[in-house]
Every structure is written in structure tokens, then in C-alpha cells.
Amino acid sequence: MEKNVYLFKILIKKIKYLLNFYIILLIIIDFLSKTLIIKNIKLYECFYINNYINFIYIRNYGIILEFLKNKKIIIYFFTVIIILILFYIKHLLKNKNIYLSYNLIISGILGNLIDRIYHGFVIDFINLHIFNYQFPIFNFADILIFIGFIFILKNNIFFIYNL
Image (cartoon, rainbow, N blue to C red; front, top):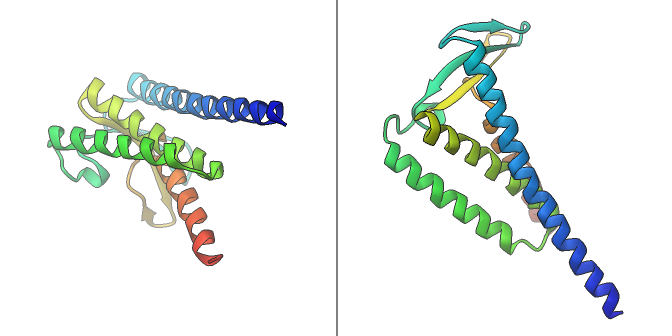
């Protein structure tokens, strides 16, 4: 019995390391996607993909929709605080199903933070438009944050529904 418990603890540790590895992998994918855009598309230039998506290289000096534009110290402060809070919450989680959601959000936030530190701005390039609706231009890190948030929301809705 003790051996089974020991093996289970080792398995849980390996799963945590693997999920933390995804953070690094997703940050690398985000960084590479942004590097490809910078090297191949000029600022404000549009690269046509199809009727629904284009790549346009823009620089975002703020956060969501350029909120807090050019307030770097405030953005850095809140970004670091949010990352620390997310790591703390992730550490407290008993339900490992939602663990990946926090990793997605942390990866996205760190990807954008690396941009801010390295370039002084965040590189946005995905231009999505459906019918006559134009979405704000975003990047791979923003997608990670959005998907992670949706997973957490879905998990909490089912939790509340089951009470």
C-alpha cells in the first residue's frame, strides 16, 4: 500500500513538471510567432491570409485596447502581481483538471511581459474579421489567456451548477 502511495506522489510530481514545461513551450511558440512577424512584415503592413483573417504588425504600448498606454511602471507592477497570484492559486489547486487553464494564462501573460521588457511594447498581429465586425488585433499570447480564462469559467460554472 505504501509503495502505491509513493508511486502516486511521484506521478503527480511528474505531471506538475510536465504542465510547467508547457508554460515554457507556449512562451517559445509565442516569441517565435512574433519574431516571424517582425522579420517579415513592416509596421502597419497587411498580409492577406483569407476573407476572415489577416496579419497586420502593430505595436501595443498599453494593455487591453491600449488601456494604460505608456504607463510602463504600472503595467509591469500589475503584471508581476497577477503572475504571482496565479502561481499561488495554481499551487493551492486540488483539482488538477483546471491546472492547465492557469498554465495557459500564465504563459500568455509571460509572453506579453517578455515583449514589453525586450521591445518596450507588445507585438500584435492577428486581425480577425467576420462579416462586417472587426475584432481588435491580438497575438498568440492573447489567445492563450482567452482560452485559459474560458476553461476556468466553464469549470466554475459547472461547479456552481452542481451545488
